[in-house]
Structures are given as C-alpha cells and as structure tokens.
Image (cartoon, rainbow, N blue to C red; front, side, top):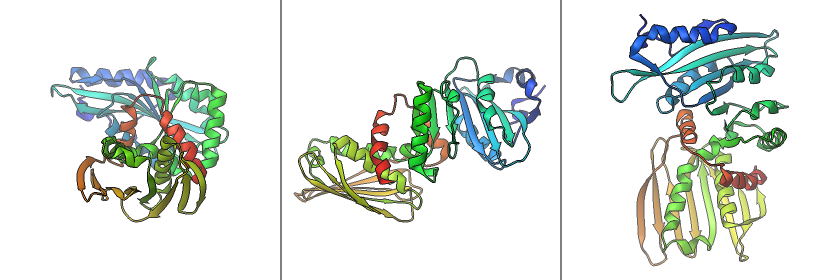
Length: 353
C-alpha cells in the first residue's frame, strides 16, 4: 500500500497518457489507503512558459494548497518548439490535518505544451475541471494576442501580475477587449495591486481617526519610494488615492505628476526608486502635518509615523504582509467582491505608465 509520504509531490510527478488521467488519479487515491483524504474547494489553473518553470511553480502551488484545498491544473507552454507535442503528469500536495491523524491531499495535473499547441489550453482546462467548483486562472507573464475569449467564459477570477508586463497599456487594452467580447462574469485580480494592500490599509486606518481625517482633503504632497522594477506598484497607489479623492490629473513627467483637487488645490506627486521592498515609504503632507508609512525589506511590519501641527508625534506598528507569489495569490483567494476600487485605480494609473 502506498502511504501519503510516498505520493508524488514535488518535481514533475507521474507521467500519464492524456486519455488516462482520471483513471490514474483514481488509482493514485486507491493506493493511498485510508490515511490520506482528497480535498478540493475550487479549481486553480496556472499558466506559465518554459519547462524550467514547472518545478518552481509546482512548489508555489504546494504552498497555496496549505491554505486552499483545490485541484491544480498547471499548464506549461514552450511555444518556441518546432513540433507540437503534449505531455502530462499527475501528483499530489499533502499536508497534515489539524487533528494530526490524516493527511489532506490536493491533486495536481501538469501539462507541457510544446510548439504551436497553446490553442489547446481551453479544452485542456475544461476537460479536467473538478465538477462545478469555481475556476481561478493564474496567468503568469503576458497575454497572447489574440486571447481566446472562450476561456474567459469559464473563469470566475483571473489572476495576473501587471508588474511583469513590458507594455502595460497594450496588455490592459488587450485584456479589456477580450473580456468585453466574452461578456463573462470574470473578476480581475492583479497581484501588483495586492502587493500594495497593506500600505493602502495602513493609510486608510490612519485617516479613519477623526483627528486626522480633515487633513485628507488638504493634501499637498505625496512621495513614494519603491524598489527597483516596482514603479508600477507605486503608480497604482497614486491611482488609488486619486480615484478615491476625486483628483484630476494636471500633468506628469517622469517621476513627477500633479493633480488638481475638487476645491482647486494642487497635489504634487513624486516617485523615487531605491533598494529595498517593492514599496518602501509613502509620505503624505498636508497643512503642516506629515504622515509617513515605511517598511524595511524583508520586514512583515509597517511603521506609521504621524507628525501633527501641534507638535504631537504618533507612532504605530501595522502588518505589512509578504511579497512572495504564494502569499500574494493566497490574499486574492480569500477575498471576494469585484475589485471595483482596483478598476478605478488602474484607470488613473494607466495614464502614468
């Protein structure tokens, strides 16, 4: 009898014929006996490119299944290969249950698509879904042109990272066009937006205080420092502030921008790159008050420092979350709603890209 500890977990898994996947999965669970139970609350499909990414992404999926039981469908494409070929493997991610008596395991089906086989993605995903459970699709990298809109009709939440795109404006336009054509119920989940979650929560919590709220309408300067390659993350924070406070863009050039407030005031925006966390510092100044939110690289905490015009200095420590792929995806998997705030923020940030 195969014990859970010998179920294939990391690496590629057990190679299987395309027409025998369900049969081999059933055999896998039969061999595991009564000491392991299969768990699935959703379908998580992941797309990546390059065979070298398969094991790396499998490790990330293993981390995700610690908190979210699912059937994982990993699709790895190598479009540069001259000939079409499809290979498949099955494996399982097992974690000890809270009671400690049994391991809870999640299935993973891995596909390698070589050559011009990317058009097979919709049929591969649809034919291997776990019943009618919701489908979350995590698309790594850039979307192809054109996107097969048939795929979106089945997806409940589409996860991507706009910070990885070389041309964000083109990718956003491509995504909007294909979603409009699909007319589906899909919800957009940008990991670049999730990356700023705890900064946005810290800012919101600080200005929720009655003594700080009046300064929000009197903001004059906003300065954000960001890690190398994360300028778009800082721009999304600016888009969030501008959309929530009804600012209108006046001008922008390079790392600086200027917005007009509803009462005719001006807010100067400055972005600065420096080594460290994706978002290192965010300073907001208004009417003699200063609000500084900072995070050191690798720290799971944010420092909030408030300097009031009357000389008071307030300090607090707030959660900062983590920046790893698994942690960012986990944040999206526990959240509901249609991310309408994100859509408004990205509409502003898009003009700053």
